[in-house]
Image 1: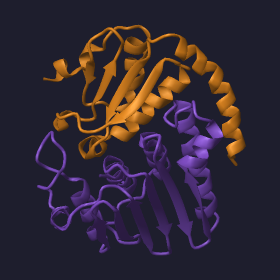
Image 2: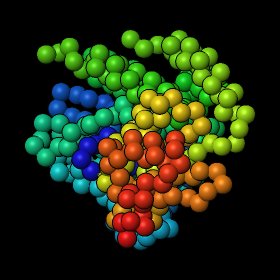
Image 3: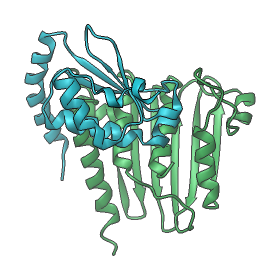
Length: 183
Length: 122
């Protein structure tokens, strides 16, 4: 994975697959850290699965026996001398937290979070919600599928190309307003 | 700065177009593989290129969606195109600059881009 936002796209799909009704994705930027948190109320994992989930030879996919999503995310975090933590309870949900040292030479770029979030919002089933929260030391904003669906009414999907473009641009504008002024 | 009000305006504009779509059942579905393998191989820019091209050409009967692992990870990024009444076409090893041709030749003019299909790659 070339960008952290690609890991986020990949890992958050797991929450959708877990049948979550509420997914909370948080990106926190501090002076020297990037903290990514993905929390869901999906099916969760038992202790045995949780213990082996960072092993590439553990997977729920049926097309092959290898699952690289979590291992790659963990690798990216540890390369920057950060860490990956997963808490999960069966039938209650899962919380994945990844911490990166932003100034470490091996820390991957964050990349295009706006596109990642827009695509995730299109992938969430209609009876589930995804909320994205962006935080910096100067403040932050959030955007959720619930408010977007309300604005669009029931008949327009979040996956429509025009809506996708709007969501990504909106997030980009908001993020820039909190990150660009400091120079 | 974008506001939710703007989204409401977009809704009204789109609702009119939606009625056009509902009238016929000739909606084309494009599925882009978005599992770890697809994403690592570059599926997100490919997905974006599909969305941009559909938007640019104002195509109303096309839905672009994400799917999981299609099963041939070494050929990712992969997209499957479903035209009603026709066999599924699987495009492999996609790059964003290949997408306008797929949209133009296949989706608009209904000529399969054979060079990009799984049959050509195998």
